[in-house]
Amino acid sequence: MTDLPDTPVLAIDGGGTRCRFALADGADCRIIEGGSANASTDFDNAVRCLREGIQTLADRAGVGLDRLYQLPAFVGLAGLTGEVLSAQMAAALPLQNARYADDRLAALRGALGRRDGLLAHCGTGSFFAAQFAGRQRLAGGWGSVLGDEASAQWIGRKALNTLLQQVDGFIEATPLTNDLLTQFHDSAAVVEFSRRASPAAFGALAPQVSAYAERGDLAAIKIMQSGADHIASDLRRLGWQPGLTVCLTGGIGPQYASYLPDDMAPDLIEPLGQPLDGAIALAQEKETTDGNC
Image 1 (spheres, rainbow, N blue to C red):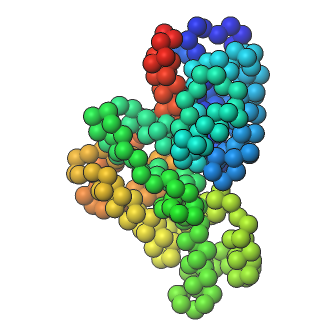
Image 2: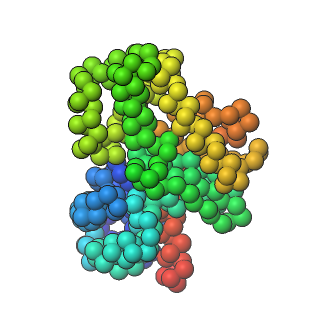
């Protein structure tokens, strides 16, 4: 793309595992991926990731950086938990016409569009959301220390805790715990890993747990069921009732479908789109609100 239309937008969906950047207009959408970006856990790395991603997007789209900086933009970023961090991020980036928010809004918009319903987003972190009559309510997303129940990193932590219970002789060994013990060799290595591991490193264990659960591993099933119980409880608190749409999104979210209560399972639907789709829609809304189209 060498000559942009008058009304393109820039959209960024940044998470603890990866960032996605889009330059979109009515006729075309150029997308690239970058590294992890969490404003709370590593602000400087998040800024570096965003700057590099914007530069790469400009290069591949054949657009000058100055032009890209001026576009209406939505930046949805993991760990952007309040106005202070949002202001710091806005000051650290050269975008001149951007709205900053945490990544929850983009995920909700991408999954539901403007429809009523509820969302459980379980990626590296997790959060829960409801949308009724155009109004949104968000819950969770407080990070690996204080929350992120049912997230991939939460599953990884649960798996290693389960392994240590097996080492202590409190539970019987299962194929999952035996496999984990082979990977880490001993309990000391597990503890050392836990001291330095990032949320993404813990989350990398989640597919292993869900795969063992599908094979009937009792320890893995217990972990997955515990996560599903968190999801069901929080969605009920947000207003779910039978008949209301529920979306499970994120890398591990859809794996919980078979563990949800019988009354909730029939209301599961596939999301309309991805968080980046939501970020694009929100960037377009900003463009309209600002009177640029």
